[in-house]
Image (tube, rainbow, N blue to C red; front, top):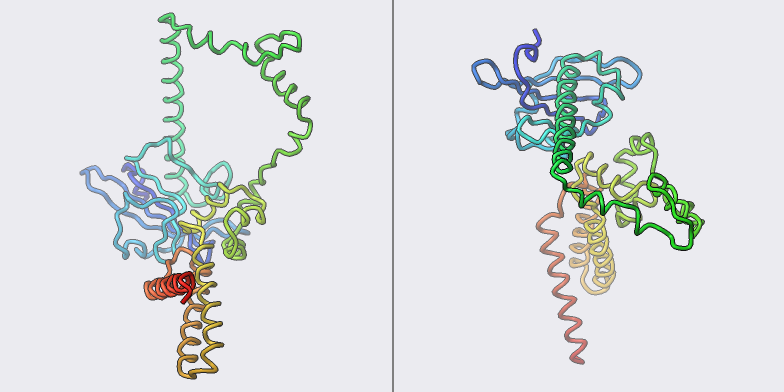
Length: 325
């Protein structure tokens, strides 16, 4: 029996497995007739070359204590990345349904009605809200015109766009003439305009592609990936990366280089000290590899204290050098 037929949907969370991207989990929250809420957790296999299937699911997500109404897209629970979050109390016009969960872009969803029906309900709700807002905007504008408020219409006359070196043009063709004038003044401007990346190319970007450019600033990474900066930030949120890890990796690289130089000096003076430096160097290298695999992780507290000590020693060395000691 499908519980969604007799009860209202209040929340829907959809998660994608970060290791096996074909595994999808959903958490449905329904309000029953007695005003109580019931949570239903489902698991699906989104196979690329066969229809989607629903599998038997244990309550895996709810083993982790979290508030459903506070969970948003981009957050990670264990191995599961939240790719869609709907809450009935949130503004409906902010709902963004990804292509993977869109019935029009992904017809294979019809093979799993327990998830498809709820997604279709959310889509209709967002469309109805958008129509109501458009209708309200239309009536507000009409009321202003009925009151005799024609100041706005007077300001919209195409007067300032008129080129005094050309013949006057009519209102409906003003936009086209302005574009033509821009092209005549700067013929290379259209060629300089960047083309947007294709939707298919953006969808094909995986976490492995981002890892290759973690050692570069995010602007250079977006240039190498041939996508815009906004698109790259959106992909980072999809993979649960709150901030581009370039600064963390660059900081660890600097500490590792300093330890390499220190180890070379200590080899000639103190063998035990050289071994301790080499041990810390290996720890930093392992931490760097971990952050490259899990870019959402922060630098360890011990490493932060060691980095602060290095900064203090450098500052003291510069101060003594300036004093001539």
